[in-house]
Length: 208
Image (cartoon, rainbow, N blue to C red; front, side, top):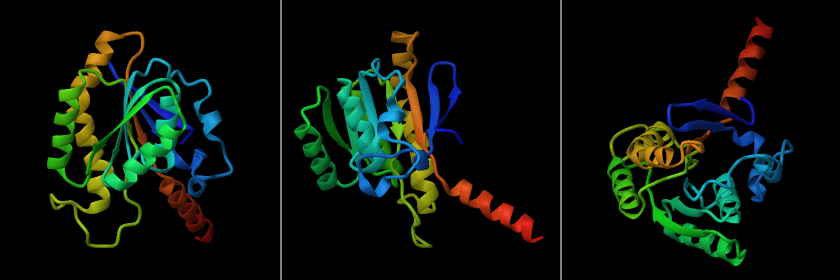
């Protein structure tokens, strides 16, 4: 996967960002490949007036929120833990960036919570220029499930975000109709796990 792959839909651009190619200001996410500055250079984000970033309290999500605020966007920072979210917002506000940030609680392990979040957002805003599906769980122990009975990793990282995207499509489509020359974007943070599997597959072929 390249830095970010894109699928062009009828009204909305869908992208996937590989976290292994992103170097944020959060030390635990640093890699030797690129910097947050190079990732954002050349990207047309000035048109983004309203954005949602899941998992925006740390790592890639936090850096994304910061870059959007620096472009004077209104950003809804979404996270499950209110204490961590509010701490991140306080840190962002201390930077005196021109944009505005607001916390909206979101638990991607509950379909009812996702529906409540979408209803809450759509009661506040009519449009959405960018949805960054970034939150997720990593290496959960065997056995835990979402509140709806799905395996936690799949239910949170995949099903939860796809359901969220479906519910927010009316706002995304409204943005597409309002500014047809600047289509809204849906971005998914992907995984390096596929690269690990490919390395193991290559090793297996060599052994055989």
